[in-house]
Image 1 (cartoon, helix red, strand yellow):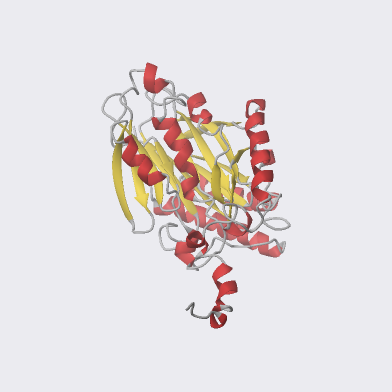
Image 2 (image 1 turned 30 degrees about the horizontal axis):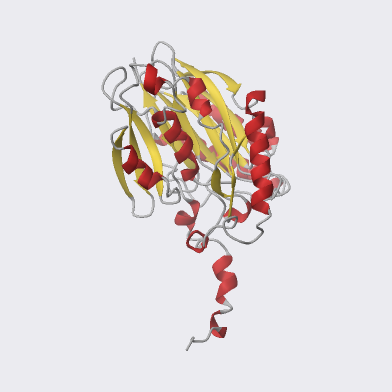
Length: 370
């Protein structure tokens, strides 16, 4: 039996009244393209949704990662949605479409991509997590907690199937290098890197010897940095992730526990501020206050012969009310700093924003200090 693949590809191609939420007409335009791809046999199944101003395409198939037909379908969906956005005169129409023509793969063209290819188990639960107003490194803390922190994932202590831990693949997105670290034995080395979330990003997580194939990732995160592609600020990266669960992996409840703390992430207004990551249901994934606060939404599926069974809206649950309340309190606290750090990002992280253009006009007025 062929392996199943889940591909999540997202892009900001326009939203209503600023950077708030995707217009339903854009989702309908994408659904039409996805239907065509399913009829052609490119896809087995799909789900179209949004998180804030990002159009999210969740696609299942048997063609493996980086498949040109699957990526072409996603690109066409974004093109059609962009046409609709322009017709409606929505804000930021085609914002993440940084290249003019599709060249076989959407990587490096603007959209964010997370993909997993795997051998289906007897039951194959997975979660698709989507963030808005933040960067790929925003997934570092929750993914670490899910796969390496026994205070989050009890199975690391009590379940012999995952007691030996997991292997993390970390990307240095500045120097374009990657390394794999095994936990728990290399946990401190891992934390030394991923705490610097603007540079070191968890890309994939792999199992160790035992229940699951070692060469099949069990979690994947999009790592595309729009500023590094475009050379300037064109919008925040708004990453996505796919995380498999149960039967030799953390339970889905342990996965969701990783998102119960609204930790500070970079992004928010103009991609220039730190703020709390608030877990919300899809209906509440609408970024308003100061273009935020940053959001994470999650949908749960079971995969059956590469079909998507579901979804369930994970964070549309009162159990996350306290996390949301805490996020709002943190948002109030951070906003009181106004343009001061640590609410505004440090200068090194402002390099690709519009701030350098503001400061440049002052350069002739500086004098030597004697």
